[in-house]
Length: 443
View 1: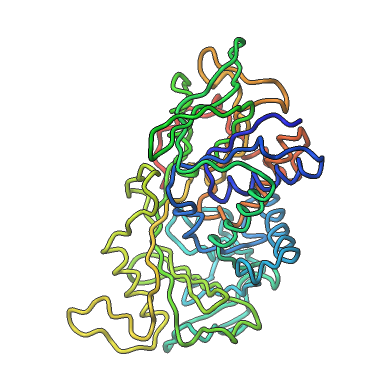
View 2: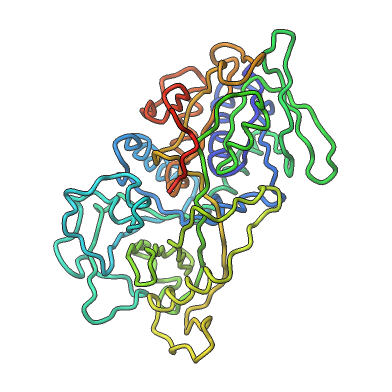
């Protein structure tokens, strides 16, 4: 019998972990009802797990996360092929373009998340040897507005990028977990850990968000997958710990739109990803999806306050949404020019959703996937040795959360089974002893 396991955070990292862990137990003919998912939000997947772009890449990562990225990309494709991902969560191959952006000097550019820190386009993370030879290589998507003197380049090798609707993918993963009798508790927040006579974690107390009624769950293995709220959750449960989890939030506004130049019947060759820069001072990212929708984002901020995580969807900022609308109209036109005083006129582009989400980021731009040593849990707190216990973190994936989600779930399942992870994540191990200052801002 596997030890009782509680996963705090039912976003895409949490449900991916529960999916693969319950699959392991099911294959061993073990009951999976001792796996518990706990989430404080009254509406699941109401942040990045539901409102991210869903762009998937095989080899757009730095050396520290390259193996995890490749593993996850393969798993996204396998899962879609075996479970009807095209129909269920809009999985589709994607062709990537850099639009109106110089590619000179790409060989000298660093890989990974430097593009995010420097405020440049995500296209800078694409493999430098997979850039098209000239303007219009590969053909730009029909929904992209073209102007005289612009420049479109194909980036990435064929078959190394894809697209999915993250909300639908999360729903699929959760449904599979519940079908295996994984227990879901929401809206509920963690209150404290419970210890046995040896000081080892034996349970966790959670509080119902509506009634404040508290419930005790058996727990010998605790996994915190709370996204941008991971540090807060850790501090709540381990108030005497001397460490501070170095995860902050990166807020991102987005639009989901429809255009008469992208609709059902145009998807035979797959979807598109367009990365560019704009005179408004940010780098738009535009992804066409199956079903006729286009996702428009790229307006990010590390200064917007993080909500408490118990209220569901965050309200977008009106001025940021207005800016996104203007740029979307510029890029996805044609359409009538807005009349004076009508800044929200989007021409023939129909906005069907406005959203704000918060992605968890670390100072070094790669996720934390590790077991926290008992010595950092605070005085008098310990866990059972080996795979029978432990406090684990899986968070900080930044803008690559959807892309790296399935690989992270597989790696967590490996760790919890005592196996060598099938992707090398030693660079993702959080070593509090090696970090002198955990208070630096994330930019």
